Each structure stands twice: as structure tokens, then as C-alpha cells.
Amino acid sequence: MKYLKIILASIAVAIVFWGCSSSSEPSKPDFSRYLPNKIGSYWVYEWYDVDENGNKDPESLTIDSMFVVGPATKGGKNCTEYKTISNGDASSSFMYVEGSKMYSFWEALSTDLLPLPLDQWILMADFEGTTWVILKDSTISGLEFPDFPGVKIDVTFGITAAKGGTKSIQIGSNTFTAQEFSMNIKIVGKMAGLEIVNFTKVVKNYFVQDIGLIQSSSDANKVSILGMGEMTIPGFLQNLIRYNIKK
Image (cartoon, rainbow, N blue to C red; front, side, top):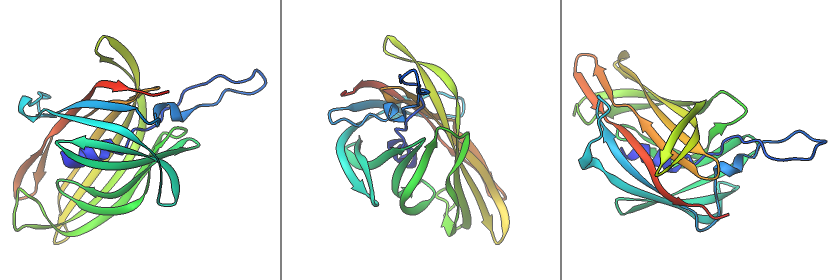
């Protein structure tokens, strides 16, 4: 679950909207309206693990919060720092928008399966494109899966993304039209050159103008590992429950 939260803390991305302009010029999209960055802005989310039938696990409920720290410089870029608090643990994320693209700085992607050092700016969204690569395929050799101690596997890991359609999402008594973005996290495992596991974890994120991320979800995955049985990767559902956006 940790890697999904890190990913979520890194993707308060901007979505296209058509703003006002003079009659002599075409209107231009303002991506920054989906990336609020004023000090005093905050978001509070509820998080549940989800089983293979889509049922939430009540015992897994956590309340996570994110707030704007302020302007920052990271990796040679001017950006905004955001702080996320989850179960008492704090982590920072750094983001900025340039043209039609939004970038997030990932120092490391520490997943339940893959400790992957990055230390680089990652393209999280391209609003004038349809699909893009977030992370090119990388291979980690000799990885040990937690459900199968002692078994060493070479794992290739990559992330692609796509802009989807829109969805109506309710927060309290208000209903918003949210833009969908999906991330496809592909994992291929080999042992002695033989492919023994191949699956894709899909994470969907929904954003609303002048609010940001309001929902994120992923289905549970039952993964078959050749000759060793199955393991289940839980899904999750994260919903925004309250927020404050400074203008």
C-alpha cells in the first residue's frame, strides 16, 4: 500500500480547462488550476484496502492529509513542495507545470515489491497527448518476493500513463465532473531466464478544476507465479472528504 500512497502524493496533476482570452486570440488551457499551490491549501482523504470483489476493508481505514508547504527548488527546477501525513509519517513531494506537461520529482519509488531508486523529475501528465511513458522499463536482479522467501527473481518494471474520459464524483452534497488519468504499472518476473509472472497494476486518478485530486482507485490483483502458486495484491479506494483551497 505504501507505494500507492507515494505515487498519490506525487500526482496532484493539472487538467486542461479553456480560460477566457481576448476576441483576437484563441483561448488557451490553464493547467495550473488543477494544481493548487497557495500556502493554506490542504486536502484530507480516507483510504481503504479493497478486496477482489471490490469490498472495502473497514479495518484498513486510514485518514491521510496533504498540504502546500510553499515554493521550492528541486533538481534544478522551481516547483511547489507538498507535505503528506499518513499514520503519523510525513513525506514531501515536489511538482511543477510547464506548458502542457506536469512533472513530479521522485527520489525513490519504494513499493511493496520493488525498491527502485530514481532521483529524477518524472513526467506525470501530458495534457496535449494521449499516452506517455512515466518510467522506462528497469530491471532489478535477484529480488525476493515476500510471499516466497528464498526465491530470487529478476523483475522488469515500467510505468505508462494515459488520459481518459470524465466521471461524476460526489463529495458531500456536491457533485463534480472529474478528469480521469490512469497509470499502468507493469511487472514481469523471470527466474533463470524463464518468465514466471507478468501482470499490470492499473491506478486511476480523478481531478477537478480548482480542487485537485478527489479520488484514486485500483482493483485488487490475483497474480499467478509459475510453479509457485498465487499471491494477491490488494486494491484500494481513496476519496477526498474535505479540503480548503486558497485563492
